[in-house]
Structures are given as structure tokens and as C-alpha cells.
Image (tube, rainbow, N blue to C red):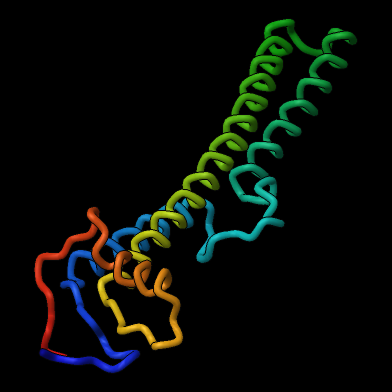
Length: 165
């Protein structure tokens, strides 16, 4: 019978699939972050309205509103044709819709970042769970069972055990 000291590995599960899953989750997070022009997940205080796509949409809407206002004034003085005013109205409505779309897309992408972050944390936890350590004698029985159980949960892959330690 082989005895192990506290802190030594009790068993190890092949980490390859879990390492690949963590890398895949990290790349998926990076992809979503790139859509926002970020390198790291934003904090709670992050303002989506400061993203370039949202600023651009709001700027185009403001520009279209100003143009429409000028066109209406010119039309009142008979300086432009009614068709030009109608085109400016259409341009403004399109710019307003585009600005709203940019805001919605930023919110969706921010939600996707939070989702991908959670997926990465799950993948990293599963990777950590591939190694079960012998608990110390001071560890309560429930804690020790939880540690052993975490590495042997039914959804975990346990194809190869490493008993070389």
C-alpha cells in the first residue's frame, strides 16, 4: 500500500483536454474583448457610451439633427426644395436608428464578455480539479471529501490517472 503525505498529489487526471478548453475559453473571451477594443474585461464602472462605435453613432445622429434643423430653416425661407428636407429627415432617422443599434450591440458584446469570462473561470476550475491533493490531518472530513469529490465529479473526464508520484 502506497501512503502519501499531506499536500502531495493523491491523483491526477490527464490535463490535456482541460488545458485546451481553458485556452479555447481564453481566446473566445479575447475575441469578445476585441469587439469592444479592450484587452481586459471591463470593471463595473465601465461606461459603454465611451466606446468608439457608440460615440460615432451619437456623433452621426447629432450631425444629422443639425443638418435637418438647417434644412428646415432654409425650406421656411424657400432656400431648399421639400425633397431635400425630406432626405434630411430620413438621414436623421437612419442616424438615430444606427446610434441605438450601436448602443445595443455594445451592451450585447459586454454581456458576451461577462459570459465568456464565466466560461473561462469554469474551464480554469476544471483544470485545477484535475489534481487532487492529500488533505492535511487538520482538514475536516467534509472538506476532504469535497476536495476528492471535485476531481472525481461525474462530468469530469478521468481517462488516465497518474500514480507515478
